[in-house]
Image (tube, rainbow, N blue to C red):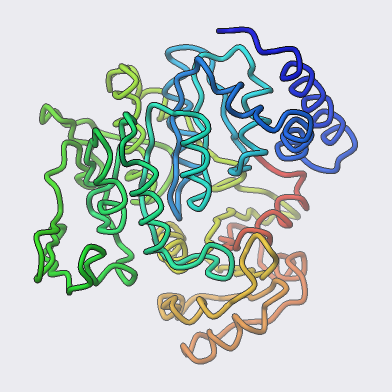
Length: 409
């Protein structure tokens, strides 16, 4: 790799020092502050750090962190990989990740949907993975059709190879201006944000996985890759049993996307798939923590689509703790709770906590789901009998719970 200019070297080194100090003092994992310091000293540091690397950018409303981890695990078969493993998905986090692995020839960066055009323009990444778009943090991110439009403009005229989920009409529309697209049938369980054609506004007709606009030519592309339950079907029609340790249909979809990205880097499935099977937990997601004989499995759900997937993973035989906050990273508007169908929780013990527990309690009451209201997560956990319990929390609530257990990985 080309050596960084002196100013960039200094900025990168001071950023790494700030990140290390942040970790040592317990103020954080350093994945943001290091990048902020580096960018303060050299505003063009991200571009300089990205130069000469083979980069993949991963963006979606749900599953970014997990898919980034899966792709990274696969590409380790080829060599060292720089990645923002803990979800710091804006430019400061990208700078920190690339600075920490300054000699890595490969990079896999999770990117916030809103920042994808800027990061793509800055890094010139050769591969972009786009998985899904649904409403999330509307007070910050805005209307998802506008995000898809920004993706279209960002990809137009660039030589980037896009790996995109063709089962999501908004993702398809956003990716369709790219010079090269590999379409993946990764599934789309949450369809409430894509009943209208993003091209003309007409209704979308759906039949099984297929979809097409009734009023224009916009339709689902023919996929090269597909997910068939627990099997990945590659472009040559060969079927591969996924058999990954991460639970749920959404993670099998993430795995197929990861395999398609790995192949775009020249890594065949038979070398990539064993690496994917090694991943058991992602930044605390799916980790089981223990306290006083109670084993709590941690599940993250940040929006209606995410809660739908979390319910798919949760064990219907177990009690469940739900925790919701509305801090800045969560989005301060909790009206999205009314888009989640909580009736699936009927018949199991439900415990509600978090800063916005009353908002969630009202939603459950309307859904006729009995629950116990708890002031803190510790109180909710103490109310459980010894044994297993599932926990579903949105972003900052999830991080608070992780902190209680020493930020379980």
